[in-house]
Length: 135
Image (cartoon, rainbow, N blue to C red; front, top):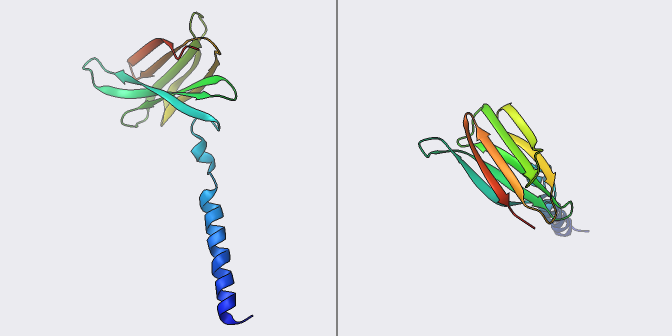
């Protein structure tokens, strides 16, 4: 094998290796709810002046048939955050609340064929949305 053939083979192997690495999905790409969840909605949380101070993101997994929610501050900063999720018509919320750097959650609820209620809080500001994503 001459030098050109060896160089061409090495270059080809490098391209294949690079494409395999580039096509691999990093673990962080799964999102805050894990693999198989995709975002289906975003709900704003506003202060009394009407300024958006945060957002609650809602995700869904077709394979598990579960909803997942996460609340983020806008802009991102350490402080009190909470996210609540439940099947509409029930009293029991699934909750994650506390002082967090990035986000509250994830929280999960199974509600196939039913509506869900979702709440998000940033500091003393909150928003509740009832009877969402029914079915």
